[in-house]
Image: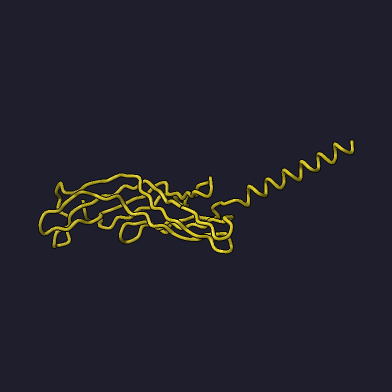
Length: 163
């Protein structure tokens, strides 16, 4: 009976140690996004902890983007013409970050809107009319978990007068 009690206590202690070890491994403490920037890009920030000292971690910010491009004339108007295009694509940005002596990384990545092949006629310039990002999330090669920003959707309309 005494051997059974010692074995039970040992198993409980080992299970507790394994739980602490799993929790103490690399994980996202937080992530977020600030909204769409004036150039149509999106900044995604994060904090990863539990890395250990001076460890390099690769992080990727990803989203689905929906961008509308158009042409504006010298009068700052968008002609009601066929020279507008909608581009939908999965977009991402990646970076390598080094943890310090505290074993964590706090940083940001900037995701750009999808590009376009639209060309504008003379006297007009290409503009990003609007962009939206959905399902914004971060992942790393050091952790099996991902972090979804809250909210996960961001949008901006830079030229509401463009049809």
